[in-house]
Image (cartoon, rainbow, N blue to C red; front, side, top):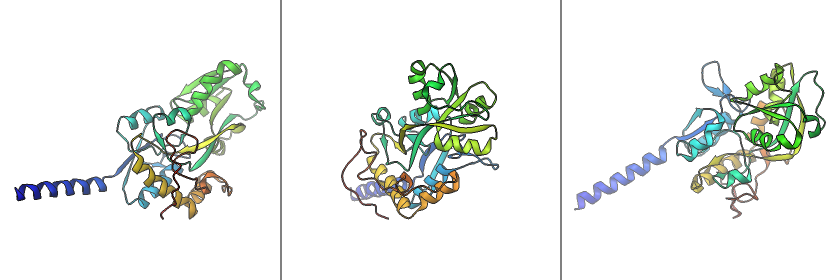
Length: 276
């Protein structure tokens, strides 16, 4: 009996140790530059790749990053394939009902990009009669679908953000709606594409989503991100990939109270100081 008990205890200890050392699994949309996009060697690079590799390192964990279409990432995570998503994901009230979010590591706002020489967009009334391209399954897709009838435009969905930008450059769509960082980055790489009108009321947190039950992992991941804010690491990555140093009150430098995104379901207001 003692031998059997000892064997069982050893098995439990070995299993727990193996689980502790298991690589974290996350995924990105690998075509969403400058957050995640292909390297010449066949891997992926970008702001979010650097961000979460460093976060995992500070957590003492290895990190496996898969690349897939954004529209399939959240269902795959909720099905247990990933521990969290490395893809920049807008923390919304609707999404927060079905998953947990870390605090934001960037602020995002919806911005339109247009073909150089096109009439600038001064407001939503200028969208009437136009075709707007979006990345399928993104928050920008959801906004466009919800507001198409209200503002009188049509929506074209594409599997990748570069395809959505190319639709504008080629004249198939009048404007692309995307995140401010992606639109501005595309403008630096595509001479015929320029960043235009921003929907200022859409500013929100870009956060790391996790399955609903992953409360302990969320604390560990958020703690790593907060330490990276405090020592300037996220601000440095932001300037490297987006070309602009974040302001003192931007999310790259702000440690938010509690755990999660304030005001959303799943937010835990319990005070928690970063342990770096």
